[in-house]
Length: 587
Image (cartoon, rainbow, N blue to C red):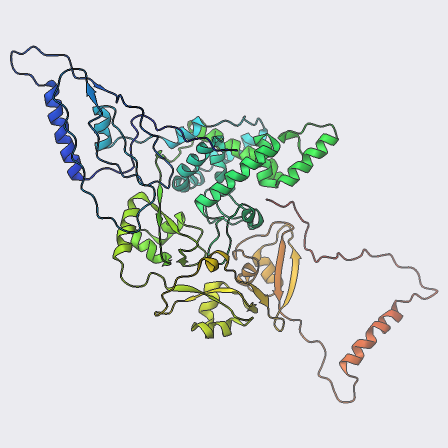
């Protein structure tokens, strides 16, 4: 589906940043002079008609790009386009602002000028005016038919009864919602889709499910790769705000094209398009309806659209549910700033004047403490911090990055790799999250300390394709593949197999406090079994001879006697080691 052109800017549009103080003073002086020319009269004179300022006769100015990646820096006000209906002295042109000395790099997308349509609008643009309400813009775009279901009422009560949870969600949403609304509106999609991260991740870009879905849109690894979301040692674009939003809307548009119904498209986003297609085929074969409410689906998917409907209802009428939504201005929160060299995350945050946590909230895709310019050529920063970052980057003396990438030439232990790169084994393991009893395979990329004499940045190929591949050390551990039970967690599996929770978390790419979904695949490297029996004494048969004799002895023992009673047949053991039942797979 081709994306429609963006809507034109609203009259009296304002910018996110205000002019300097000298511009403010000069412009106010011009306004006072112009107002005096228009209204003051000498004693005895007959007052003339009031001055009227008409809208520009020229065509409507081009629409202002309101995408979040646009730097909003307002130019000086323009007077020349305004006309009056009586003979008055021509309004002087505002002096041009002095050109700033260019610095590299500069924020992307230069601002477009705005045209004041009246003196009142001009004054408001200078001294500041209340911004538009982003929530109202969201409400105006609702287009999906309402779902009438008792589950909606239950979810409304749940969300409205959690005011602190709603506050945290809307506070996090303030960073990203404007950008998402812009993209949804640009594509002509229903605005309900902009609320989907509320129920997917509570707008937490670091959210990671037990099924390994990640980011505010909760992409599974395979689905993310299908929609060109890079996942490697250095970054995971499923957490990238702009890239994942693009991929999510692409996927939702594809699903709507498949099913022709937004409720079914949302169910497929949660459950998988193949599962929804099969459920529709079953109903069609049985002569039953094929709408969302008529399909048989897992509880999570059955509850999915009602959750979104409940959030939509609360956003549409917050006062009816006793919910106070955090005010959100209809303005971009962040802008995109290019970088040309690798740079440490902490240094980038320092140059921008941000806490590291706030920097990571806008750039959550980084897996390591360094940003590789070849793979991540831009960073997102709040508008007020972008210029500070550009200036600080230009003035910075010394190296920008403390880390670089190294490729293992052969399969080796972490201790051997650490010795080659001049690091301690503990530091190398922690930096690259290498669990115990694992080997680093040949061709694996490792993040290592950058030598003071090393000035080359990581290559584009390595930044885009670098992966860490591990292999278990067969002399230390045995690999087990399990199926999670209903109440299994990382901690419970660790206790069961006498390993640490950190090890189980690293083996399964989870956190030590995570829980496994029923039926999820679990990998455990258990300690070797202890050797049974006493030390062999002289004169006894070797253990290999005894072991070879055991199968024949067992076979003789299994032969039933003629007078023996038949035993009840025992069920055959499952082929796969399991501690529970499997469940449906999300995307």
